[in-house]
Length: 151
Image (cartoon, rainbow, N blue to C red; front, side, top):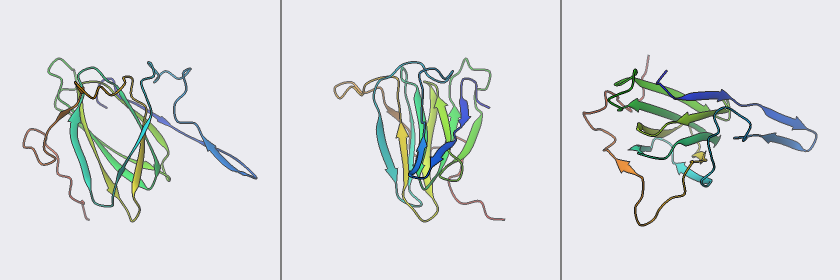
């Protein structure tokens, strides 16, 4: 596991009316502080990545469909520098992924439905000076291939 990344398996709380899914609580160890909440979507087969932040920590939960979330530790001073970690999260595997600043990440919608990811970052998005740094999805810097692995 990449240093600083935390994963929490989430659970549905059902009753006769439906269900509730807690995404992030301030009394969980993954919580640092609140910046904002937003939803991002990827159509099936679409890759949204790579990007990273210098300040912000992200907290990803896939609330609809399935997403393949991939992390790459680009931090030179990290004990897991150069490591790649892959997760499949969504309706069949409700999970929270805490992604520390400096860890490059992206996701791909897999399956037949749009993948909806709720993110609870620690910082507000700054429209004038975004803490958002991008790399091409097929960059040679990251040893990862987004294609489906058959077999």
